[in-house]
Length: 296
Length: 189
Image (cartoon, rainbow over the protein chains, first blue to last red):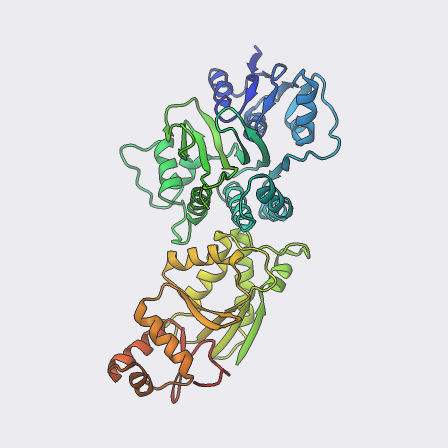
């Protein structure tokens, strides 16, 4: 039996949960159709998470592209269909990617090895400086921290996931929640996830409460790594510091939990537990446009 | 013996791509450090090496941990009796500093930075260590008695402070006194 998974009209890190909820009841080896016909917008998180969804299916899934031409043409420019065709049987109107998209700082890029991180960081630097300073009113000096943040979140895939993932960086105006422009980094993989990664630490003793939420708290808040090396765990701590300095937000979903470092402008829940399970780790970093008098 | 290591050259040899100028990822950092260690293997029992970041675009936390922290932990360490290795870091800019400062704090390390205005000690040093280091840097080759006189402190106290800085490889011990790393060739005050 084939199950139809409906992609919501607006796909972001919140609404992706609707997709995961639908998938929860479907065995991994069952045939699914991912129906994005009525989707009009997707964040970088939404697009990279859809690709990881394709990775998780044992039976190759079908994917129906958005009916809306602007939407599917935009998805093409982000590189989505180029990667999707390797994972899904594509249906509907799938346009060829033409020209660059100014709001796409980094089109969807696979990350599987250390060299990919070099490539991503090298490509982002020049464009990031221009966007951060001119569009987001953020000091040009923040560009280095932005590239470091990007590097560290991508490295989580290389170091811990056990399989490749994707990264995308984009700017847009976040009208619904913030009313300002933002730059968003999304890094998604369908690998082993934080809990399994930490469980692989030699000699690790599990506490009474050991689940995905506890694993996320350990890694994201307390900087715990599966490696004994005391220098480990600095990457996500550095990401947290950078995000805090620029009044940004970081959220990480892994397994059945999601943790967020929530700035004052957002009303997200810091820790969500008992979500529908989804493999791997999905990270989103959001840096908002700086308004005068805002943090420096 | 003083050796100069251009980190960006080592990086290009390591990642086998001329276009990469950023020190990112832990495997890259480990590979760069291994290359640096291979260069150090040819040095004498006591050596001063300039680690030059002038042509490095940026460095992330993971790479800083591999290249800087592990290098210091392994070589700038008094427990190591076979070799006295000193490092002077050159060309470090604001673009590198965030990652470097983070790993120094994490491992409670300190190093000497060469800047346009001279050298300075950065990282985890207490006020006393900093005062002593700066005075040695100012004086040039310094015996404990010279330092005691300059600071108005006891000689044995100064000797202990100099020994502590030497153990951290922030000053070099010679037959007739101590020299701050970064202070070699600098005219004495």
